[in-house]
Image (cartoon, each protein chain N blue to C red):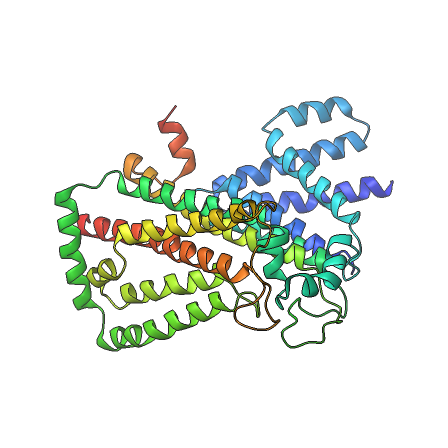
Length: 114
Length: 304
């Protein structure tokens, strides 16, 4: 059971990659990519988790409490923000692609552009 | 029969079923090539390398094989990690003991984000800035006067469509959303939250105006120059605070403000200042991105 959270992360990365590769719609592709990125959140938070430790906020717990790793949480925070911005940018590109070429299928786009 | 051969047989059996039951042709192509790889492995295990070679050259193996290898590599990689719940990273364990005393911030994630790993966040800030500008450039490039007028007509028409209770609810929720966002930004160093989280909540306040059918008002409460200014000022503010340390003869991003008393609103040195600049930037950037998409939606629904 100790490996289970990590295997879930691997699964999310794999299934997300599958979705990206086989996607027939740009919006579907972007969402698949976000599933793939979710694997990094699961991985990072699973690595930093400590059994019996508290959230790293000392606002209402004693100063000597055991806390889970705040570093991976800060990294995940960065990750979430970057994921959102990348999605926004990709969706903007999808809108442009649809406007220019009249299709949202990545494969058709490839055929159009040779 | 060896266990490996039995396993390969089971996989081929399952694989064959999977190919048949995948209805969507494009997906079926990928499943089928995976099935091809399984067959090749089976042939190889049955001591028929020639057949295996021909099987593996038939169809596209490269892609599924890469995915399989990546998957195997990932699984192998995670087995090397410390067991779940037994975190032993020196960085985190050190911070557990020193962060509270060093920075007087009760939310430890906040000093890690803005201080210990402040350089990462500076980069993240500029990614956000670049993405917002990129969205604006991409979505604004093909807009002309005539179409924009049509869009504002369309926006006025849309306001009629939205039902009154929805409009009332959206209007009522705007002020609490602003207050909540400001609260989350201001208390970033004390409780969970901060510039990023609060900034998005602030942006959601302007989106509520749009949800209430007030696309024209949406434009008025969030004119693009103001959004761009907020985006830029926030990003620049973070950079200025970062180089502020240099002015005082310290390293970049080094704290140069008094730490204050723990759990006070104005404490933890420059963390509230950094949270504020990030809050302004995120609110500006997210609203800018959303307003560009809103414009697109209005333009397109008009054309249809």
